[in-house]
Amino acid sequence: MKIIYMGRKKQSVELLKWTLDQGIEVKAVCTDSQFANSPTAACAREYNIPVISMEEAEQYVLEHPGEIDLAVSYLYWRKIRKPLIEGPNYGCINFHPAILPDWKGCAGYNIAILKKLPQWGVTAHYVDETIDTGKIIQVDRFDFDYRTATAQSLEKVTQDYLMELYKKILLKVKEKGRLETLDLDNSKGTYISRDQMNEMKKITEEDLVSEDLDVKVRAFWFPPYDGAYIERNGKRYTLVDKEILDSLVDKDTTALF
Image (cartoon, rainbow, N blue to C red; front, side):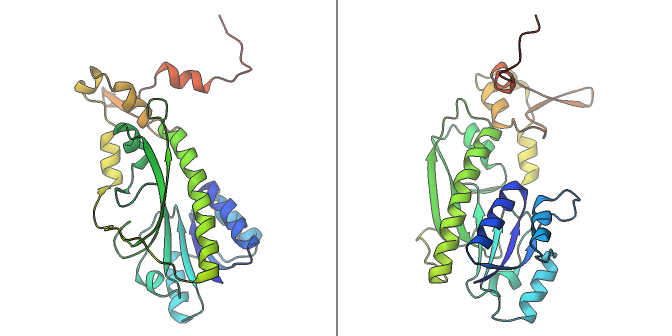
């Protein structure tokens, strides 16, 4: 099986190596290669896999009809277009770190905590021309505790599940080709843009007196990125509570006072 691999972040590196270990041929990698420290780009070059732009990948598929079996997207941030959706023999599959059809776009981890959900999950779905609306292949759910979770801790757990889902789906595609999908209407649900997510971080005067202030603080705790913040004199200040600070303490650190 021949694929085009689109991915980023450290999980993408591990999955790229795993994919190659399964005897799947990765013809090209699309990633955040505009950054000098891109781990996925470095891994691809280590294995002599071409690192190309999405536009170059589209052109390759158009010029080599029938050669590419599958395109996969793992945390790839760009909107995927028709050549990579329709060109590969088995389509294009995205791995989404949230439950579909419920939560599309950004802010999934934040919403899970803010909404005090009892479960979170990961989804594999075919890509269509609209973000996160393609036919759903599989949804895996897991329990979590919104009372103690932060966006950062929930992301870590979610990525473990998402990586396992990637492996299960890739092996199924290798064996069966195009996969059956679930009877779910993926046009429904809530889409949250990056701008909306950033707006949600702002602490209002109502938030400051709310019993759920700590929930909002944990919902956006994801250093080094800005968390839930207040604005004073034109500056933003991220809020943090004692439980988060305690979780950051090195166990070998002794008290200063």
